[in-house]
Image 1 (cartoon, rainbow, N blue to C red):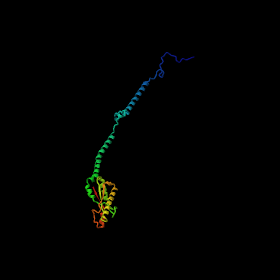
Image 2: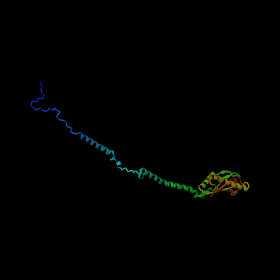
Image 3: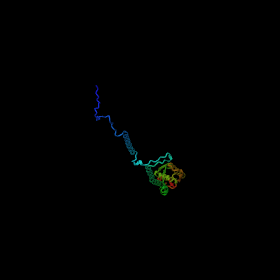
Image 4: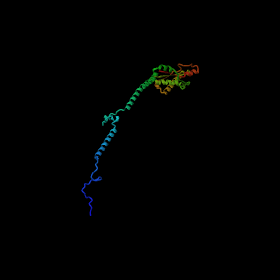
Amino acid sequence: MAFDLNKNDGSKKEPSKFDLSKAEIENPTPKSRTWFIGLFGILVVGGVIWYYSSGKTDPAAKTSTPTVSSNPASVVVPVTPKEKVSDMDTTAAAQVKSPAIKEDSIRKDNLDAAPAQLPTKALKALNHTVPVTFVQGSSSFASTNSALIKRIVAYLIKNPAASVHIDGYASSDGPIAVNQQISQARADAFKNHLTGLNIEANRIIATGKGIENPVASNNTASGRKKNRRVEITLL
């Protein structure tokens, strides 16, 4: 004997409150719309980041970059302010230094020309001086005035057009002819001494004067010693 549990007794059956099979849960927002909003937000954020990172707000980025031509001849290399300042400083320094250099050059030329412009004073100090004396009967030096010789040489070097006359003398000892030969040998000996000090031989005239023009008495030994000499004359 079977029992029908689904038997309808004629009354209307109410649906159960726990019947989950009759309705489906609604999705309030479609998935495609959510994806679109997310993508749009990413693009907006990315655009803002790109705008600031590209340097649009940096004043230095607003400076236009010069167009570089592919032709090397048309490329103009700009001069930086540092180079301009350097050039200006170099030019200014040259302008400041050039008058001083010119002034020094003029001063040097004047110093070199001074002896030639004032020969009279030098001639008075040097002419008819006795730079060396000699051994009796010889052309060997008995004494030398080194300071005087240096002054004579300096004058001749600073005055290339000047010349010097050397007069050789002898004492009265011995025959006159021998004394004449000795006086010439003494003049030649001092000439050779000057040429050894870089004075050209063609600027030197050496003459023997014998026993003429004694500077001291020949009657005494000391006087005769002084007469054995050379004297110079600058022209």
